[in-house]
Length: 437
Image: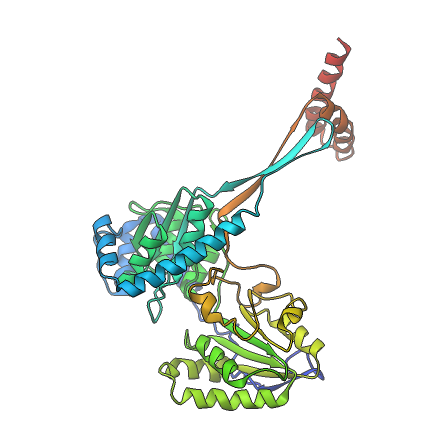
């Protein structure tokens, strides 16, 4: 997709124009991975560890006889971790644990009696075994295991199984260990998703898989979904800033490039009602790219997927923001707290100039595994509630049967379901007989 500067985003003609247009459509740049992932899943399901070993050799260029990280290897990775890095990791773990526990405390069991004799409720049940996929990436993303493992431990899951690429930095193993992973496996890519979904001789089958990954991981999660739960399907990272004339182009450009360095497919953008701010931010991004150490990646991301949109008024700015439904949405307006209640589609909200995405990415406590590619229109991000089931129950005494059975009998008869009708009637008839005795 090539979009001209000065043209309008589709559906926003007369309301918004591009000051810096994206060169490509990140939603269309998916690559042809479906067939390969299908084959990987089939092979791992049929041949277990042998297939995992073959794909690890093919894609990760490593031969492993044993996939699981032993207790001694976990401790060795921890011992080799730089002490300040360990302290920072533990700081982040504690913040994520504290926030997850506070969230869990809001998820309460329910027991009500809406009419005499009819008892309804739900229970909060931790998922028995969950899998945490921990991506390797260009850099050792030390926050990644924290975000997928810690909430599972807080939720009370019996077992959290972590998989990470076999060539991941040793600090990543230490991070999995510190976060509380019960078992850690050196398996990456689609073969890791397959191993956790189907189980192998070495890897136990899990009930739900959490965590982001590349296009192959994402496709594998999509294909195993059904018998196995998943948290969400993740696309490339995203950040958008919504700003009025009070916005600071230096801060905005810094935050956009802070995400752009993640990956060459990262989508970054500014939505503003101030054309001068829009134009100043374009210049500021160019200036910072001249000295940014990660400019090779960030520039490609900015050139291909970066956008700056000028909106004619606040209503158009809100509408375009909700249309994008950005993974990370920063609010840089005169009254950011008031403005924050006007937007509704996003993964996580960063209110005011001090709330940079980097803080959430690393250590403040909110989870950084968030919806992308527009999924913020219908869901939030990973949280402790993703690791529990809300399962309903009901029980009835004689008064409850007397209250609901007649309606159930009539409805079943209207639908022509005799078996249903009999199941309702037999209990009702027995209650009538018992009360007459």
